[in-house]
Structures are given as C-alpha cells and as structure tokens.
Image (tube, one colour):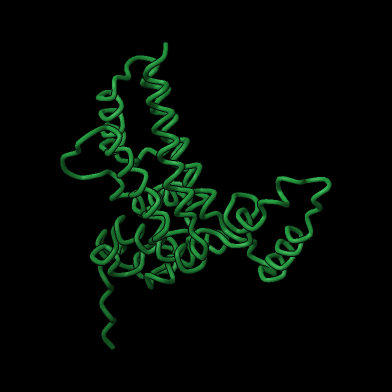
Length: 253
C-alpha cells in the first residue's frame, strides 16, 4: 500500500489555517474589512441599541465576522468609540466662504447639533471623546481658531474663547440629547410629570408660575430628550447669547 504523501506546511498554509480558526481573523476579512467599515458598523450599532448595549461582539455580529477581526482594526473599545464620534461629526465644519466670524460660529453650532440629532445615542460620548481624541479632525479646530482670530482674539484670549466655544456647543447638545433612563422609561416619565405638576407655589413661586413654559422645555425639567422634544427656540437664543458674550469679551480688557 502506498503511503499518502504528507501535506507540505508553509507559512502561507499556516496563515490560512489561522484565518479560518475562531481564534484568528475570519477567512476573507482582509478583502471585506477595514477600519472604516468597522467604525461605520459600530456607529450603526450605537444608533440601533444605544451605548449601554454596545459591544465589540455585536459589531462583529453585524459584520458577520469574528470579534478578533474587529479587534484587528480597532485597538481597543475606547479607540473604537473615539472613532465613532469622529465619524458622526465628520461634516461639522462649515464649508465655503463665510461673511463673518459670527456667521461661521452660527453654522458650526447648527451643524454640530444636527450631527448629534442624527445620532443622538452618541451624546454621552461627546464630552469624554472630544476631551482627548487623537482622531479628531484638525481642520475643525483650525476653522474655529481662524474664525476667532478673525474676530480679534489672540494669545491667551484666543485660547479662552476657543475653550468657551467647545464647552458651549458640547454642553448644550449633550444635555439636549442625553439618553432617558433605559429601564422603566414610561414609569420614570410619568413620575417626572407628576412631580413637576405638583410643585408648591408657596415654596417655589417662580418655578410654579412658569411651569407651563418650562415643563419638558428646560434642562432638568424634562421627561423627553431632544429626539422627541427638540429645544429649537432655546438653541437659537443660546447661540445669540453666546455670540453676544464673545463680542463683549472681545471689547473688554
């Protein structure tokens, strides 16, 4: 009886075996997977199920690959979330010519808010991921600095104005689109409505007298977020108040 010839083991064959095994990259992912598709799938997962339900395993399931294949393109969960925020805010920088620095800032504020409105589940991520995000677009930062420099800010006052812009835009949108409690949401909403309806005028006269205006339209006094009850009028007023403050800051000192 002839002996069966031994299969020649090469580096290429070992790589194929590894790619086909559960512990390695799934077969064929080299052609179908890249960092962009992984980040896009992660954003879709957060849009669908929220941040609390987000996991690398679910991203891999959406892509039809092993979790190790996702890890190949995303060094860590934190880095993947940072990339998600960058993708969601990719079109925030206003394009083209602008008639004034005030107009540039108005467009920036509106475009930032619209990006979060499209992906409201990233709201909790914005502050933390913009704090130290190596993938944030430098063109966005340069555009803000240029508009403020055109307004007359320089040196430490340029830094202060820039920080104020980011704190303002991030703060408003993060609060407006903050997620509702994930469990027993309807019960929580009903309790909020009842609590606000029962405010005693003797103890809180201004709150009671203005409750029809404030209820579900003011921060900390809402039972819906900006996805269902957007704060459009307040946002417009906020932009004008902020720009007026910058103009005042520019004229003093």
